[in-house]
Image (cartoon, rainbow, N blue to C red; front, side):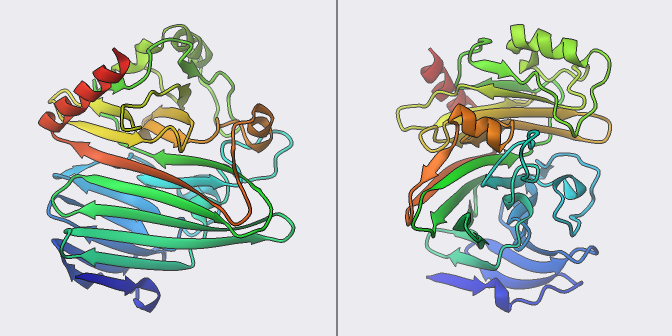
Length: 358
């Protein structure tokens, strides 16, 4: 039996209260002091907090007693449409009409309209037979003469799993083609001396460090030199030593390879043997970005951001031809899996990666 709850009918009050229970889950609703509605989904292994009407962000994620979410300057989400004024979520959909930092001729906000889009509808589905909980949100975006699409975001958790299945589908509601750019911004918390292992060649040609510096960051002395060193030898960043200068940030594009089932894999292996993990299908997102930021105020790593484009803004990516085209009345979709792996699960994924890169 599947129980479906329409979040439009739920009252999100100051006091957290249970709104659904079953299939190994406890679902509760509340509002942060900032006024933003939130949904807490607890499983047997952990919990996520979703902002159902603000970008459908996963604000926080915890499994097996460990917080996977980046460290940020924000203790709660803030009501704003400015990307950097409420930045601290575990997962953010970016796009869909542009991604990256806007270039000199661009007019789009940083990472497009999706990160803080006002999702109009939301649902929770509890499936007793499968022991799953799905959190679903939809956002209809309409700009006269330009865009009309429906984005459907879905997060699915199994009651006894520490992994999330994440998807986004974009339906082009116009009769004419739509240029689409997308990036999945999954912000894990770095682990000192964690090891980055992923299904790509570890060469400067396949792991390309971004040398341009976005307008929203101010480099420190030695930063440009560090980028140059990484560009020659990307393996320098494979062990997250506390002394490495990912301040304010380092980004790189990676040519990921897929396994026989079509999945690319990336993980951050902890010194104790467990890991944080991301997998996706390169046939859906042909690019992959890695992002690392380690400062006294913010500590985050994007182990692998599946994306359609690089991150230099709409005009630059359009010129490169790095975007998807969704024909009128057609759909585009991306599917990912992310979360935490036990030591034994980590060993199994490492075997898959070695088979790809051998």
